[in-house]
Image (cartoon, rainbow, N blue to C red; front, top):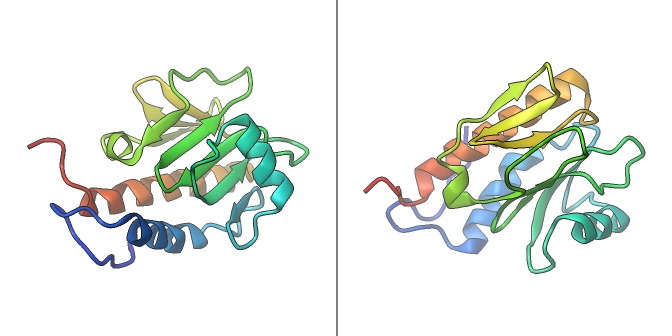
Length: 159
């Protein structure tokens, strides 16, 4: 169940309210081995993710590492402005970023054959090193939970 937020659609939440709500959702998934919230995120992992795929202006709420040795040069980040990711050579994707307004329109599924989280429209997050089969399924559930929550608080683009 998504946490309550101060404002509901059609009035979008403030960035601070949105970050707080996303933090509460992500905290329930922090026990997955490859994942960190801002409270437990090692500085080196954050630095590597910023060099590889997270813009410096973004506030990272949750970071998942898809590397075998924990460098966090690959993976995905839940940020205040949207979802960012970087894959290895084995996972093709059309994009590497979705704003939250774009993200709410996506169908999110787990592709067990390719170890990918499918975001639809040709966008995929490689997840081969993300916490085994259970971890990948839970990360997919996390993204679905975030999407479903955002659908309740962001203005609909279908107006």
